[in-house]
Length: 114
Length: 114
Image (cartoon, rainbow over the protein chains, first blue to last red):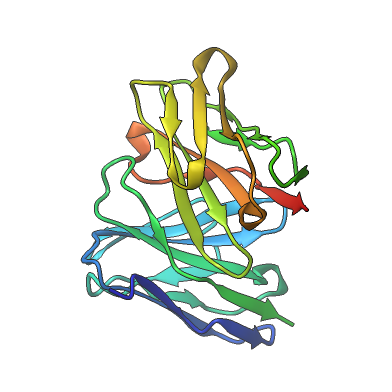
């Protein structure tokens, strides 16, 4: 199993550009989520999904869209990038929505918005 | 709302010395608690978790943590630190009504000196 994979590893955007961060898992996990990591702030939840076709907002959803058309994939879209979205983005998945299922994290995407 | 405080941004210990990383949480009901480790340039790996029962939990890599309800704490310990333990450590809290959504602390960077 590859686990949770994310592409690209690094990305530089100009303000106003759009892009999609890809996330895929091959563990047949129901629950997937996106976090952003900023220095001194830990990880903050952006969006999450409890299954194909079901998504919801986390703590910091503004400026991001998600969809979940398949169990395996959970892309994160930046509609119009802003410097405040410079961050490291992590995708995670777990077997189910149930509390406490271990979340497996991808290696992250480092995004810089100029 | 849930919150997690990791009071120490950086900690430096000598190889072979004992380690304690502090974590305090704020939540009214019984939380469930996690410690994750992040090596440079990597995703997060679960060290251990607490749901209920025995308040002293054992994890991987020789780590343990103790849940103290009266102090709202979940400190991570290791009796003898190895150079490979140098990493960033995150405490996270969840609650039953929030499913698998987690709130993370800001992290503690551990440096190990030889």
